[in-house]
Length: 262
Image 1 (tube, one colour):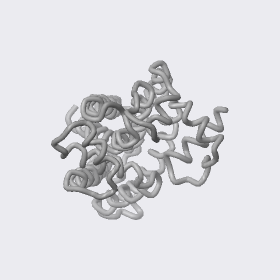
Image 2 (cartoon, helix red, strand yellow):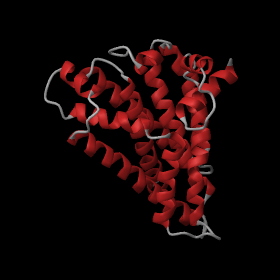
Image 3 (cartoon, rainbow, N blue to C red):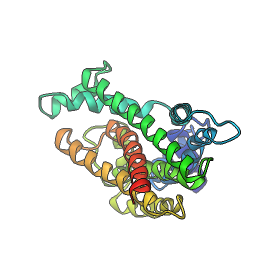
Image 4 (tube, rainbow, N blue to C red):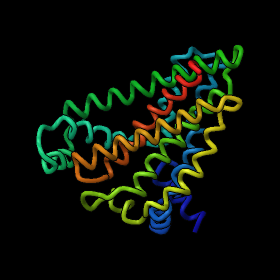
């Protein structure tokens, strides 16, 4: 069951072609602890392009940062960005919950969604550039693997943040959100946090950057949950997808700030 749940998590949270069968999905839906575990895998994969800033490649920092952004969406897909766009459009609506829910189901992209997408992608790119520059400085000419630990910690934090919402949230309607939230209870968040916590040590010997990344991701989840409950009536699939994207950006920036300022 553990391996089946992990296969399902990889199949759902990445574009790696495994775990797409019904049994794997069912096991994953009942196992929110798999989110942060997959976060370690994804974080390691997407951090690899940042190493191009080191010799012998020594590509320019902006190029390495672009490689990181491309890697993120090559590995995880762009499905979660749809949640960002939908929540952005819903946030721009001047109406009640029903009107916002109607906008969530509208496939057309509005101004709110466009701005939200631009901010998330720009935030991801600038965070990647900051990580490269910090890592190069810390690595004395090469990219410091300790600094790249921020990237993995941020990915683990983003996945843990989403899993936490799965555990404590209630969906406002049937759909992807309810398929996940109905299978978990608040107590299921404890293994999620326990499995995510070691990511704080990935920037060793610096601990604060990893801690900051994890806390920023979880704080993002709390803010999204509060907004979604008040404005949408619960945690929808769009809210879960948007949490992953926004929490990743917040965690990366928080980790870099902690590295450079403390």
